[in-house]
Length: 248
Picture 1: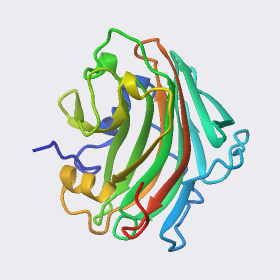
Picture 2: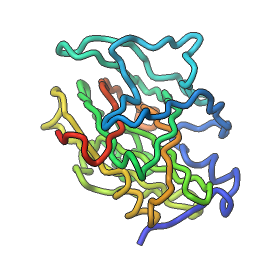
Picture 3: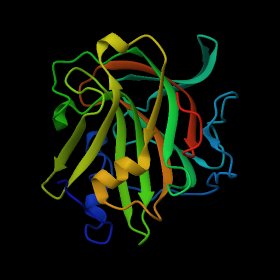
Protein backbone atom coordinates (compact mmCIF):
# COMPACT_ATOMS: atom_id res chain seq x y z
CA UNK A 1 0.00 0.00 0.00
CA UNK A 2 2.79 2.38 0.90
CA UNK A 3 6.20 2.89 -0.71
CA UNK A 4 8.93 1.10 1.21
CA UNK A 5 12.57 2.16 1.15
CA UNK A 6 15.73 0.99 2.85
CA UNK A 7 19.06 2.56 3.63
CA UNK A 8 20.85 -0.13 1.62
CA UNK A 9 18.52 0.14 -1.35
CA UNK A 10 18.58 3.94 -1.59
CA UNK A 11 21.97 5.44 -0.73
CA UNK A 12 23.13 8.85 0.38
CA UNK A 13 21.13 10.78 -2.23
CA UNK A 14 17.85 9.55 -0.79
CA UNK A 15 18.93 10.41 2.73
CA UNK A 16 19.78 13.90 1.53
CA UNK A 17 16.22 14.26 0.28
CA UNK A 18 14.49 13.27 3.50
CA UNK A 19 14.21 16.90 4.54
CA UNK A 20 14.01 18.70 1.17
CA UNK A 21 12.03 21.65 2.49
CA UNK A 22 15.01 22.80 4.49
CA UNK A 23 17.79 22.30 1.98
CA UNK A 24 21.43 21.69 2.76
CA UNK A 25 23.43 18.50 2.47
CA UNK A 26 22.70 15.48 4.64
CA UNK A 27 25.04 15.18 7.59
CA UNK A 28 25.57 12.05 9.63
CA UNK A 29 24.50 12.96 13.14
CA UNK A 30 26.88 12.34 16.02
CA UNK A 31 24.57 9.92 17.85
CA UNK A 32 26.20 10.00 21.28
CA UNK A 33 24.92 9.36 24.81
CA UNK A 34 21.50 7.97 23.83
CA UNK A 35 18.86 7.83 26.53
CA UNK A 36 18.05 4.21 27.40
CA UNK A 37 14.79 3.47 29.28
CA UNK A 38 15.17 2.03 32.77
CA UNK A 39 12.27 -0.40 32.50
CA UNK A 40 9.68 1.86 34.13
CA UNK A 41 6.16 1.83 32.67
CA UNK A 42 6.63 5.44 31.48
CA UNK A 43 10.01 7.02 30.69
CA UNK A 44 10.66 10.72 30.01
CA UNK A 45 12.50 11.16 26.70
CA UNK A 46 12.34 14.96 26.74
CA UNK A 47 11.88 16.49 30.17
CA UNK A 48 11.67 20.29 30.27
CA UNK A 49 11.24 20.71 34.02
CA UNK A 50 14.67 22.29 33.70
CA UNK A 51 16.05 24.04 30.59
CA UNK A 52 18.57 22.04 28.62
CA UNK A 53 21.90 23.69 27.81
CA UNK A 54 22.08 24.66 24.14
CA UNK A 55 25.54 26.25 23.81
CA UNK A 56 27.37 23.99 23.98
CA UNK A 57 24.50 21.56 23.66
CA UNK A 58 24.14 18.86 26.28
CA UNK A 59 25.30 15.34 25.54
CA UNK A 60 22.64 13.22 23.93
CA UNK A 61 21.14 16.21 22.10
CA UNK A 62 21.83 17.78 18.70
CA UNK A 63 20.54 20.98 17.08
CA UNK A 64 20.41 20.47 13.32
CA UNK A 65 20.35 23.63 11.24
CA UNK A 66 20.12 23.92 7.46
CA UNK A 67 22.32 25.76 5.01
CA UNK A 68 20.77 29.08 3.98
CA UNK A 69 17.92 28.82 6.53
CA UNK A 70 17.82 30.56 9.91
CA UNK A 71 17.01 28.24 12.85
CA UNK A 72 13.84 28.23 14.91
CA UNK A 73 13.90 30.26 18.13
CA UNK A 74 14.24 28.00 21.19
CA UNK A 75 13.40 29.03 24.74
CA UNK A 76 12.23 27.38 27.95
CA UNK A 77 9.16 28.73 29.71
CA UNK A 78 6.28 27.89 32.00
CA UNK A 79 3.20 27.91 29.76
CA UNK A 80 -0.04 27.88 31.73
CA UNK A 81 2.02 26.69 34.68
CA UNK A 82 3.51 23.77 32.71
CA UNK A 83 7.30 23.55 32.12
CA UNK A 84 7.76 23.54 28.36
CA UNK A 85 10.01 24.27 25.43
CA UNK A 86 8.85 27.12 23.18
CA UNK A 87 9.70 26.88 19.49
CA UNK A 88 9.01 29.84 17.22
CA UNK A 89 9.60 30.29 13.49
CA UNK A 90 9.60 33.28 11.16
CA UNK A 91 10.31 31.79 7.75
CA UNK A 92 12.83 29.63 9.58
CA UNK A 93 13.46 25.97 10.45
CA UNK A 94 15.68 23.63 12.44
CA UNK A 95 15.49 20.38 14.41
CA UNK A 96 16.28 19.65 18.05
CA UNK A 97 17.26 15.98 18.34
CA UNK A 98 17.30 13.69 21.36
CA UNK A 99 19.21 10.47 20.82
CA UNK A 100 17.49 7.47 22.38
CA UNK A 101 17.51 3.70 22.21
CA UNK A 102 13.92 2.59 22.75
CA UNK A 103 12.69 -0.89 21.83
CA UNK A 104 9.22 -0.85 20.31
CA UNK A 105 8.78 -4.37 21.65
CA UNK A 106 8.92 -2.92 25.17
CA UNK A 107 7.79 0.69 24.68
CA UNK A 108 5.36 0.84 21.76
CA UNK A 109 3.75 4.18 22.68
CA UNK A 110 4.86 7.80 22.39
CA UNK A 111 3.05 10.30 24.62
CA UNK A 112 3.43 14.07 24.84
CA UNK A 113 1.70 17.40 25.41
CA UNK A 114 1.73 20.23 22.88
CA UNK A 115 0.10 23.61 22.38
CA UNK A 116 0.02 25.63 19.18
CA UNK A 117 -0.11 29.32 20.01
CA UNK A 118 0.33 30.64 16.47
CA UNK A 119 -0.75 28.44 13.58
CA UNK A 120 0.61 28.79 10.04
CA UNK A 121 -1.35 31.17 7.84
CA UNK A 122 -0.63 30.58 4.18
CA UNK A 123 -2.37 29.96 0.88
CA UNK A 124 0.05 27.12 0.11
CA UNK A 125 -1.39 23.61 0.23
CA UNK A 126 0.28 21.61 3.02
CA UNK A 127 -0.25 18.45 0.97
CA UNK A 128 2.36 19.63 -1.54
CA UNK A 129 6.10 20.08 -1.23
CA UNK A 130 5.71 23.87 -1.61
CA UNK A 131 3.35 23.95 1.37
CA UNK A 132 5.22 21.44 3.52
CA UNK A 133 5.44 23.61 6.65
CA UNK A 134 3.98 22.74 10.04
CA UNK A 135 4.04 24.57 13.39
CA UNK A 136 4.97 21.36 15.21
CA UNK A 137 6.43 18.01 14.18
CA UNK A 138 8.21 15.01 15.58
CA UNK A 139 10.84 13.51 13.31
CA UNK A 140 11.28 9.82 14.17
CA UNK A 141 14.06 7.51 13.09
CA UNK A 142 13.88 3.77 13.69
CA UNK A 143 16.34 0.96 13.09
CA UNK A 144 14.70 -2.35 12.24
CA UNK A 145 15.74 -5.88 13.14
CA UNK A 146 17.98 -5.98 10.04
CA UNK A 147 19.71 -2.70 11.01
CA UNK A 148 17.99 -0.72 8.24
CA UNK A 149 16.73 2.82 8.77
CA UNK A 150 13.06 3.79 8.75
CA UNK A 151 11.96 7.41 9.10
CA UNK A 152 8.65 9.23 9.44
CA UNK A 153 7.09 12.28 11.04
CA UNK A 154 4.19 12.90 13.38
CA UNK A 155 2.78 16.34 12.63
CA UNK A 156 0.24 19.02 13.49
CA UNK A 157 -2.05 19.55 10.49
CA UNK A 158 -2.85 22.98 9.13
CA UNK A 159 -5.96 23.51 6.97
CA UNK A 160 -6.36 20.32 4.95
CA UNK A 161 -4.93 17.58 7.17
CA UNK A 162 -6.90 16.23 10.12
CA UNK A 163 -6.15 13.90 13.01
CA UNK A 164 -5.60 10.36 11.78
CA UNK A 165 -4.68 11.37 8.22
CA UNK A 166 -1.57 10.15 6.43
CA UNK A 167 0.43 12.37 4.09
CA UNK A 168 3.03 10.81 1.77
CA UNK A 169 5.21 13.31 -0.05
CA UNK A 170 7.19 11.88 -2.94
CA UNK A 171 10.65 13.20 -3.76
CA UNK A 172 11.95 12.71 -7.30
CA UNK A 173 9.98 9.42 -7.44
CA UNK A 174 12.65 7.76 -5.31
CA UNK A 175 10.56 7.21 -2.21
CA UNK A 176 7.50 8.44 -0.37
CA UNK A 177 8.11 10.05 3.01
CA UNK A 178 5.27 9.39 5.50
CA UNK A 179 3.68 11.96 7.81
CA UNK A 180 1.07 10.94 10.37
CA UNK A 181 -1.29 13.68 11.57
CA UNK A 182 -1.75 13.50 15.35
CA UNK A 183 -3.82 16.68 15.66
CA UNK A 184 -4.42 20.00 13.96
CA UNK A 185 -6.93 22.59 12.87
CA UNK A 186 -7.63 26.18 13.83
CA UNK A 187 -10.24 25.06 16.36
CA UNK A 188 -7.55 23.33 18.42
CA UNK A 189 -5.11 26.24 18.55
CA UNK A 190 -4.47 27.97 21.87
CA UNK A 191 -4.86 25.08 24.32
CA UNK A 192 -2.84 22.12 25.51
CA UNK A 193 -3.49 18.71 23.99
CA UNK A 194 -2.32 15.45 25.53
CA UNK A 195 -1.50 12.95 22.80
CA UNK A 196 -0.61 9.28 22.70
CA UNK A 197 0.22 7.35 19.53
CA UNK A 198 1.02 3.68 19.09
CA UNK A 199 4.36 3.75 17.28
CA UNK A 200 4.37 -0.01 16.75
CA UNK A 201 0.97 0.22 15.01
CA UNK A 202 2.16 3.07 12.77
CA UNK A 203 5.34 1.14 12.02
CA UNK A 204 3.33 -1.97 11.10
CA UNK A 205 1.07 0.01 8.79
CA UNK A 206 4.06 1.50 6.97
CA UNK A 207 6.70 -1.22 6.96
CA UNK A 208 5.30 -4.46 8.38
CA UNK A 209 6.26 -6.37 11.51
CA UNK A 210 7.81 -4.03 14.14
CA UNK A 211 9.45 -6.88 16.09
CA UNK A 212 13.01 -5.92 16.95
CA UNK A 213 12.63 -2.31 15.78
CA UNK A 214 14.08 0.51 17.91
CA UNK A 215 13.48 4.24 18.03
CA UNK A 216 16.94 5.85 17.88
CA UNK A 217 16.28 9.52 17.04
CA UNK A 218 13.47 11.81 18.14
CA UNK A 219 13.48 15.44 17.03
CA UNK A 220 11.27 18.47 17.61
CA UNK A 221 10.95 20.09 14.21
CA UNK A 222 9.19 23.39 13.49
CA UNK A 223 9.44 25.04 10.08
CA UNK A 224 7.98 27.82 7.99
CA UNK A 225 10.84 28.15 5.51
CA UNK A 226 8.75 27.05 2.53
CA UNK A 227 5.90 29.49 3.07
CA UNK A 228 7.68 32.35 4.87
CA UNK A 229 5.00 32.28 7.55
CA UNK A 230 5.38 32.34 11.35
CA UNK A 231 4.46 29.87 14.07
CA UNK A 232 4.74 29.31 17.82
CA UNK A 233 4.49 25.89 19.45
CA UNK A 234 5.12 24.43 22.90
CA UNK A 235 6.02 20.86 23.86
CA UNK A 236 6.19 19.26 27.28
CA UNK A 237 6.68 15.85 28.90
CA UNK A 238 7.56 13.65 25.92
CA UNK A 239 7.52 10.00 27.01
CA UNK A 240 7.89 6.41 25.87
CA UNK A 241 5.34 4.10 27.42
CA UNK A 242 4.67 0.41 27.89
CA UNK A 243 1.23 -0.98 27.12
CA UNK A 244 0.36 -1.03 30.80
CA UNK A 245 1.08 2.69 31.29
CA UNK A 246 -1.99 4.81 31.96
CA UNK A 247 -3.68 6.31 28.90
CA UNK A 248 -4.66 10.00 28.56
